[in-house]
Image (tube, rainbow, N blue to C red; front, top):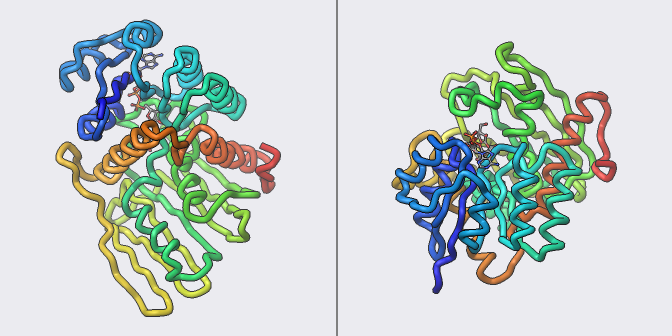
Length: 342
Ligand code: NAD
Ligand code: 89Y
């Protein structure tokens, strides 16, 4: 099997996880990196032994002609970089949030489609092993047909020290973290027709909202609550665990703090430890996210090899991003938002 040669753009805080994971991916590796910040370029190049280093993404794509490009920059640069990859006919992964608005997101999907280039959004939370375990329990039929869900992420973890830009944007928790929770809601319970949202800021030291409570009507009639907070001080800090409740016609699923899953069905109750693996390069409490980075990157390579659309393709991610937009619009108006109008 020929090794696919990847190029990474953006050598910042999160890219280090992606670089570690690429080293373990079967059939692929990163052979060139780019960052416009020379210090970050040097740090990642030295840490991972990458000699091909570029300050300019276009120069890298032209010289290296990689098999795929992995964009790990923040949102402002996503559209120009995805369109650059499309022009060079290079399959592309783009970090979340895919875009700051629907028009940019649709343009990026259209550019890749027109160029015949696969596009995946690095929407990794659905790839966390506890979330996959919940989905497997639903699919097993043990709880019957789901009619209610709650996807909950509540924490007071200091995310601002590693990602200072999160304190500065007009938008914060829905665009940064709630986007994952909304994607998990779609993954577990299906697409959404209507969303009602309430947002607020509790932490006076940041610009955007840090608490969000959302009510989702799913196409199949299921109702869910998606709630997230970075202003919730708990006895035991749960970061970065997403807690899940699913009620079905025959039973229920609870994914509780500590990666404890309880499945109650016709045949009784099962208690399961669904803790993520601690990969050799990972560190607590990030190991849950880090494991999902490895999983989504392997999925990308598996899909790329056989020409299959990835689970979180650009096209799929438009539906997750539309929920983010609906949350901001709905919170501003105080009214429910019809997703068909986003
Ligand atoms: P960061 O600011 O630490 O790093 C971004 C890097 O990209 C910087 O070094 C910057 O110099 C570089 N860069 C920006 N534009 C560039 C360009 N045009 N060409 C070359 N280099 C460029 O940001 P971060 O915290 O690593 O976040 C990056 C992305 O990852 C964000 O979109 C964030 O939301 C996302 N993220 C995802 C997860 C997850 O679990 N999926 C977790 C954390 C962050
Ligand atoms: O940026 C965020 C993400 O995607 O996962 C957690 C995070 O790092 C902080 O909220």
